[in-house]
Length: 101
Image (tube, rainbow, N blue to C red; front, top):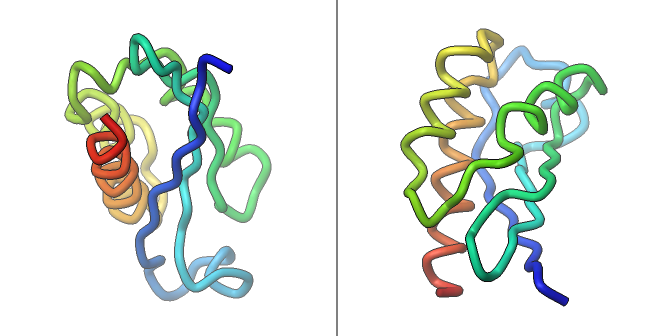
């Protein structure tokens, strides 16, 4: 297998629908081992549309280039309450990726 599965976690802000289900927000990603490219991603946002949107934002980014571009993409394009939690979960996911390397 040429991919790894990595998860990043952060706290959800109060008042979010997902907080009724989960205490934390989790982003998971399947990442190509050789190039660090996010093949697919998912998260624990409450709506399918939100989960699909995050997957679309992250897919194709190479973690070998760092985490700044994916975090910036989330900050620019995801304008919901979970924006900061998504950015934090991405940074945590990146830490896990760096530990793996």
